[in-house]
Image 1 (tube, rainbow, N blue to C red):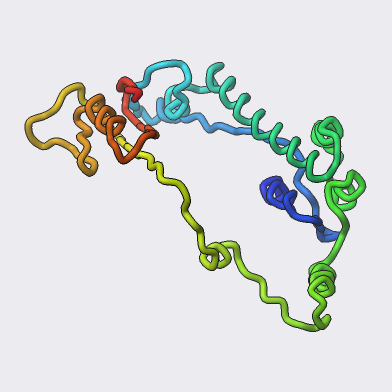
Image 2: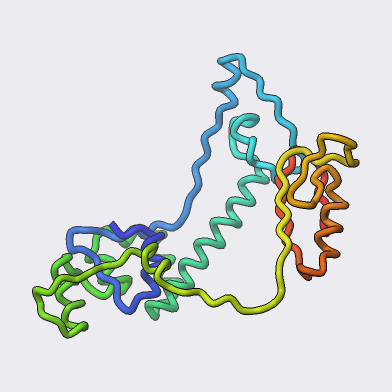
Length: 228
């Protein structure tokens, strides 16, 4: 089977083949949630959860018995963006119209490998030996020659990446509760930056001569966000 994820990557290739007995996954995106509130109540387990705002869905499976409207909205937007990107990329690579691709999803038209070929999602139906023979032909080598395939990981290690540019980025990563003031002792530290004083930490990073820009990622338990 060619999964949607694999097909998305394959759209960058010159040709896409599928095994005649295989199939291509073309069904759009969906999300399923497992809610445990009722189970926890039967087990007499009461989780202690602290959160602020509507769009806080990390703990939703423990405190709700169904998807909230806020979570449904954000998942719809997220999956919709993924879906539109898949359709646009496929349309550009295969010279197809996005309306045709949507129709194939909505009406479940891609069920077999032959369906994928008929709707021009792939270039042909080939068995493994036929694909390898085509590769040998393009390489102009003997039809019985051994093909030495290289994994993406090995290929990446063999490539030399040249770094350019002089600018640097300060990365401040903090997880846990953020204190509003410095502690005299036992202060948590990340390098030379104090995590007990979030505002001061971000100020130091912003004023650093070594890093003109700053990227901030924080995972805090029910605390305020401080922006640099």
